[in-house]
Image 1 (spheres, rainbow, N blue to C red):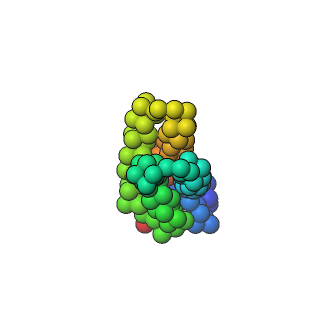
Image 2 (image 1 turned 60 degrees about the vertical axis):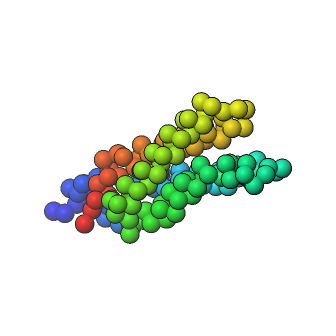
Image 3 (image 1 turned 120 degrees about the vertical axis):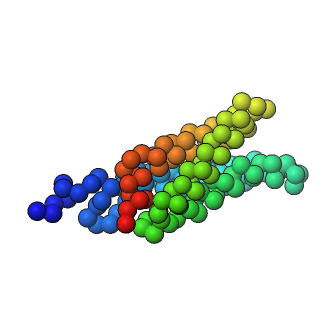
Length: 136
């Protein structure tokens, strides 16, 4: 008897990704929107050099959000690996940015990337998400 209970946790009958993948995709989209709002809110009165410095950490986040667009069914293991590597860079750079923050705005900017990006990274590395990306 081929029942839904007999299949592996990452194999769903309706073709939907597991909850971990859907949650990480949602976190990446929220992080991308938060980055856009942060850049727009803090860009008032900045020089082009300072605006580039402000936008640089968010470019990797927006790249992860673009990769997350393919999480619905066409993504495979390489997409997950690329997203995890980019999120690792974002998280490590944000930790460095939080430790050297010059004010509360810079600290909050880095903290948002650490919390949301780190959570998405952990969700993508769970066995259910890994198994879904490795499916045939």
